[in-house]
Image (cartoon, rainbow, N blue to C red; front, side, top):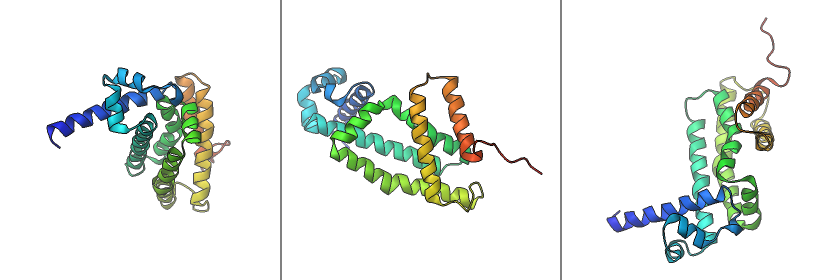
Length: 200
């Protein structure tokens, strides 16, 4: 990459980072190219030259974000963390996502842009789901999850916990209450509501 290409990539990255920050608090409909240009310190023409339209820019921002999330999840699944730590990560993921995209923004993007729906579907089916199956398969092989429960059932249960955690975390203030909720949900995943069986 020569100097010109490197500068161009730096400008594109700055535009995308600015757009991502705006999506944390604004509806895509409220964001204007002029606002992005002003915050990023570039001209509107520059944005159109690089991305073509606001919609194409937001799609590229979302695609990069989704791939980054998948890459991070892969490093967690294949890393040396304990199963408990990996489950905590999965439950925490919705909380972390809400700091980047407000849930209403995500819902709006998914509802109104079929290309973004397709990005999410493909990322989940081609990368996210196989990684979840790998995680559960290893845990079953290690005796950390009952061999009598199917991979599909464990993934379904994890998704249910994840969705419930997201709704509850949104209604709570940041701090000890959220940490306690996450710890309790991980406990429920491993032991149910009755707790671990006493050792004989």
